Amino acid sequence: MTKRNKEILALISVLIVLAVAAYIFLTEKPAERTDSTTAEKTRPAVPGPKEITIRNVTKEAIPYSLKPNGSTAEPVEKSLAVGAVVRIPATQTMVITYKKWGRDVTYSLSPGRPYSFRSDSDDNIDIWLGSHGLEDAEDLAPFVPTPMEVVEKMLELAKVTKNDVVYDIGCGDGRIVISAAEKYGARGVGIDIDPARIQESKENAKKAGVEKLVKFRLEDATKTDISQATVVTIYLLPESNELLRPKFEKELKPGTPVVSHNYIIPGWEDKEAGFLSIKDQDGTEHSIFLYRR
Ligand SMILES: C[S@@+](CC[C@H](N)C(=O)[O-])C[C@H]1O[C@@H](n2cnc3c(N)ncnc32)[C@H](O)[C@@H]1O
Image 1 (cartoon, rainbow, N blue to C red):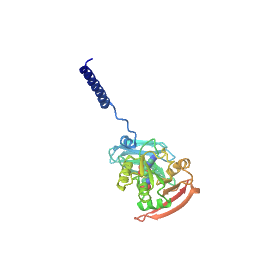
Image 2: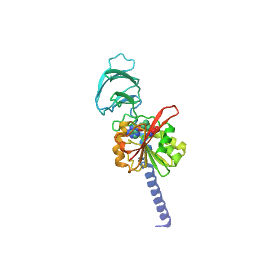
Image 3: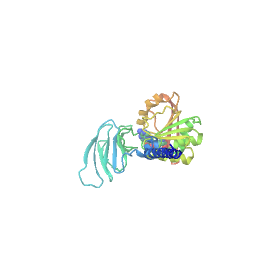
Image 4: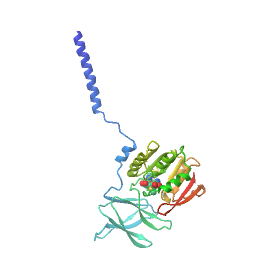
């Protein structure tokens, strides 16, 4: 083979290698991203904007009737089984009627909102706004933020330090773990099932400049691992606290402070280690319960 032929052969080999590399580069699919950012974008919000969900968190089936607001048609009679969630297509306000204290009561339900039938401490059934309409997850509480002055007292009562990892179960806009990071340099994990809340939490952490100290997880808090927590904060309904109690007992280390805004943890009376009552700026009284696992 002449020198020139060898050069041509070498050039052809280089071109083939480049062509194969270009083919692989252009046809290869990017690796699937499994981080929470992708999950947040792909997870559909339930209810969607044109539906209403109703969940039955009581211990009995609930008969109810429903019709669009202003409609003269006969309302549709239904019954909601214990633990069930119903998704109702709705582009306008719906009017629900059910029995309370033996009498018919009527409420308006807005499209895009999740609702729950719940019993109060006197066993009266009422309909409340919820957090989500997902069938496979508990609705622990609707989003109601803890006032900042109460957040500060919760962290003080738990004696948070920079060595702590604060878990807020149902973190809302992230204010508790963000405050713990800002004020004490503590690390934090906020868990919420609502994608809008997680998005808001991440933005708030960035604004506060503590995004390196805190993480936010879009998850059902009843199914996520909380064993790394050294402090736990909650602002959930009492029945949700009761539901989470076995999880706390299983996953938290003995002595871990659990601070609850406004509601007790039923069954943990012997673990109560502190109590505070403070008024917020509007004069509303708030209770803070400290437990030690
Ligand atoms: C009363 S708010 C408390 C927010 C925040 N912890 C605070 O104190 O300001 C309750 C939060 O729990 C969330 N939530 C309800 N069910 C949940 C579940 N199964 N898993 C995780 N979060 C849930 C709601 O979306 C809501 O943001």
